[in-house]
Amino acid sequence: MALTEPLDLLTAFPGWCTSFDLYARQEQSRHASGRTRTKDFGQPLWRGAWVSRAMRPNQLDHWRARIEQAMVSQMTFQAWQSSRCRPIKHPGGTALPTGKLHSIGADDKTVRVSDLPGISLSIGDMLRIGGGLYRVLEAVSGNPTGFFTVTPHLWPGTVAGQDVVIAKPWVAMTVDPGSLSASADPRTGRGTISFTATEAR
Image 1 (tube, rainbow, N blue to C red):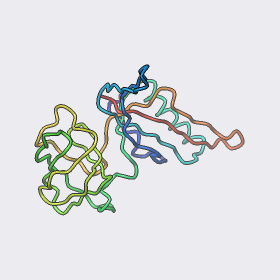
Image 2 (image 1 turned 180 degrees about the vertical axis):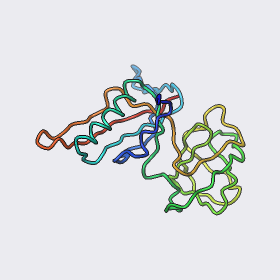
Image 3 (image 1 turned 180 degrees about the horizontal axis):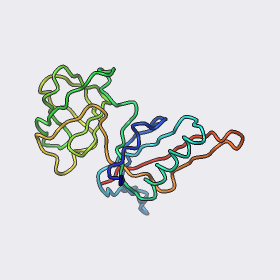
Image 4 (image 1 turned 90 degrees about the horizontal axis):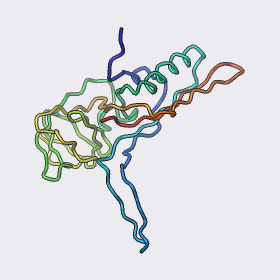
């Protein structure tokens, strides 16, 4: 079967996401006067880092091959923050509803969400709205919710009525070239894998 994008790399990955943060696409320059100016080259992108637990040789080779293929081909994969597969106030394994984007504030960073009855969102929760991934910056509940702030700003093309996913919200990423490390202990063949990835748009 041919590989198709986005790849499903993380569902069975034997490890953890050690960082998942926004990366500002900015450049700073210092003027002769001493003033520093910042140029913005676009909206920030999500970046993440993953590290596996110690694996046996066969398992290590399996994951080395999968991640190396994704890195070399630059195929996208579904990436999410391991600690935020569910809202903070709703742990466990019960099914979570998918909401709808009710309305967007004039500043393009505040939203109202509907169709999430009984769900409370906390600061730090993650949402997938359309094709974008956002972090909640204000605690909110209700159906529909009041306006609350997310980061980053909503991407162009985001419109009311789009799905709002709160269960394992993901974003398309590509593995950063040269970031794959898969070292093994020469005595046992056991080893760990680590890699970083950046949002692909």
